Length: 219
Ligand SMILES: C[S@@+](CC[C@H](N)C(=O)[O-])C[C@H]1O[C@@H](n2cnc3c(N)ncnc32)[C@H](O)[C@@H]1O
Image (tube, helix red, strand yellow):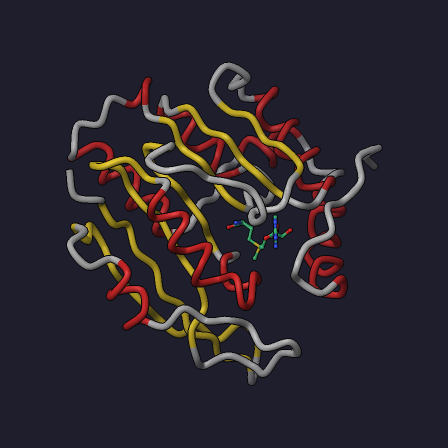
């Protein structure tokens, strides 16, 4: 358990409890399990984009919004980047901090308890911003926050994104999916290092759509 308090966010408590249950189970994970850094496809594509763009990794400052169990932040820290994670669930932050210590990434990676919305991201503040499967839970703030995120990325930096689209089961409140055309229009002029989508059956009768991108802001 952790002595920090969860942050109250726009997503309903029931949904947050669902994620928290996963993180609670991870509190008992072995060191060996936590050393395994499973990351999603756009994050692996981002590593490739950093490589081919010959980014100065030691000075590449990444913000990861909704950093969950810290796998992505540690993976990027392991590449040499400086990563700052923000996550609303205390158990997730506890696990991420354990990973950071175990992988000896304290100089590279930090994670704090916080809301991904409701604070000023600034203009051209970060080299790259990563947000995986989370922006859609800001509902009426999803698109405005997307715009703030894009403005906060420096010229030549990357936006690393994954989110759901239809098909998806009906939720209450309705998830604010960022559609393929909305994403493409917001990234007008950016270089798309990858842009993809698929549909996955999570369990029988539960078919979900996904889109993702790694997009580079024009210099
Ligand atoms: C589907 S999980 C994705 C976690 C992580 N990005 C990943 O790829 O494994 C959604 C995450 O978003 C977090 N979350 C949802 N709304 C949030 C908010 N407003 N501020 C901070 N974290 C939030 C949840 O706690 C959860 O960790």
